[in-house]
Structure formats: C-alpha cells, structure tokens
Length: 264
Length: 150
Image (cartoon, rainbow over all chains, first blue to last red; front, side, top):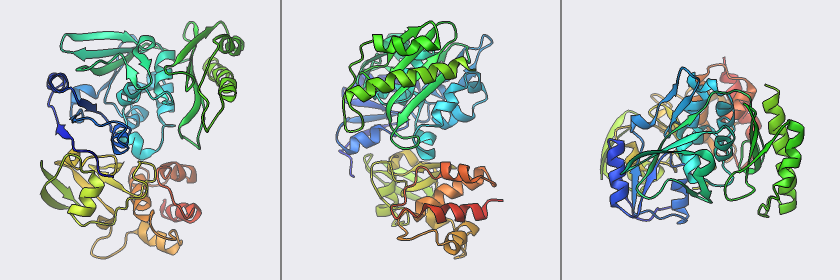
C-alpha cells in the first residue's frame, strides 16, 4: 500500500524533535512504526510529517538505580527489554514483552509506542498502571511526570499533548507481579487482559474492557474477582467477545494475574 | 530524499519519497523481488529482511529509515550460486509448497540460527511466529530448520 504523501524528519536531539512537533500541526512522532505505519496504510491516520525518533540514543537506555527503580527510555524495544540485565529487576516486563506479536515486531516495537498509542487491546498500558509506573513527558516548557493512572485518557489518547514527547518511564522496585490474557491465537491481540501487582496493596489493571485501563484493588487474590464485579464494567461487544463474556473474562483473568503475582 | 542503502553488500544511492516503504524500495527501485508482499498489514512476514543485523518486516519500515543501513534479503543468502545449508535443508525437507512465504521463512530462520545455533523445536516455532505459510506447510519448515540446528 502506498502511503499518503508525508514529510520526514530525523532529529538529532530531543530538543530538535520537540521543535519539529511543535512547529508542525500535522506532525507525529514515529517510534517503532509497528502500529503507525499500518494505520497510515489504512488512512486511519494521515500525518503530514513523521518525526523519526530512531537514532535518539537519549531515548533508548534501560537503567537500574540503587533503590531498585527502573528507568526505561521510551524508545527501548520489546526485544531490548527481553534481554536487558537491568530489566530483570522487574521480571514481568520481559515476560509480557515476549508475548507481544512476533520477533520482527518485537525487534522494532517500543515501550513508548505501545503506551502512547493506547490501543485498548495493548499489553503495556494495564501493566504500567498495575506496577505504578511514572511517565516523563517533555515539552517546550520542560519536563513533567505523570503517574500511569493519569496517563491514559481515552482510546488512542494519552496525557502526551501536541508538541510533547514521552521520554522515559520509571518503575518502582518490586517483583510480585502477574499478567494474564486471552488472545487471538498465541501471542496475538488481546481479547481481554489483566496485570496484577502485589507489592504492597493488591492492584489489578484490566485491559480491553474500557477506553483506558481500569484499576481495581483488593486485599487478597480471593477478593479480586468480587472487586472486578463491583467495578460495574461495561466493556464493548465485538466479533471476538460479547460484553457479557468479556466481563466474565475480566474477573477470571484478574484472579489469574493476582494469583501469579502472589505466587512469586 | 537522497538515501544510501547497502543491500547484500552492494551500495545503492537513490532519491526516494519518504512515503515509500522499504519493501517497495527493494522490489520496485532495486528490482530485488525475492522479498514478497503478502498481506501488506505487518502480519504475514513474507517481506522479512535483516537490517543492520535485526530481523524486521520491510512493510513496516520506510525506505528513508534504512538510510545508511546494511540490508540483507533472500537474494544475499547464497554465495556464488551455492545454496546455504538452510536453503538446502528447505529443499530436502520439502519445506515449501507454493513458495510465497519462503523468502521470509528463510530470513527469519537465518536470524534465529545466528542468535542460537541449536534452537529447540519450541524456539524454532516461536522464532517463526511472525511468518505465515498460507499452504500451512509449517511441519516441514520446522523440520528443515531443526535439521540445520546443531
């Protein structure tokens, strides 16, 4: 498929990328391109300019601080997260990344692209909410930090505004996490998913049931299913699952994810 | 935009539109038609190539993004007309039926074997997850890769 005509810029720094995004209304950041290029083929998105973030080394690293806080550059790929010695501090990251699509997609697709596209069926938005990640957004006015719970605003919509970029994600120390999903084929698109974290309170974030991840909390793994039911979910019906079935899956997957987290 | 891309060891300089996908650049501009377009939606893997050592689907990369890169396609696998061990194994195990997915299967298997010379059957299947064979001839493809695994 031939894309619509588009301008292309490859900035040499974050500052230059921000200038390009701010100066061009129709500019979009191009991360791994594993979603954006395809929606451009379908004309579901038609940016006038692509600002290619590949090559910005400042967006790439994965660092582990002394207190166990993991800082991940927005352009870290799923494959990089899978083999990173630092990322092993939070094992769920590599485990979930290994179930996203296939080798080729994991080699290009990035953590930043996954959360910024905020497709409700994506794996990482609920995971970021469950683990209490903090997202750093850069813009003309400098940097601000947004908790994952406030980062996801709607379908394909996040706190990253026009002229801004997600630069890095920091994740606090902790190991007791779980993830469960029902997918279209092995490692396919999620029909429903749940990420759990029991480092302190029991937090379970559900994906595919609303425009943004839905966070529920409970005191124990046994209480998770009731907490999900009490959330009065109104998930969409589609060809893969009815609203009723997706609601049922949400409680089942939340429990599985919480049990996995407790078992670590 | 002027781009310089090295493909299978040969360096090409071309003026390309930013909207051109790498697969179209390879096939239409360089006449390297070994890499196939199957689905054009990033699912089938028939367009898989190796860019700077990394396996990618060339329908999800712009040609301009390959500026300065070294690209390997199925045409670059054999040397002096001699098939690689993997290609011979595909032949011996009847690992192709219509052959449309074969270039992608070969590139994905090549990338796997470079990283892991002795993959298990499970690892082979996981590595080929991004490549769809519409003849459903997966069994013999996995057998061919297995036979090359050390």
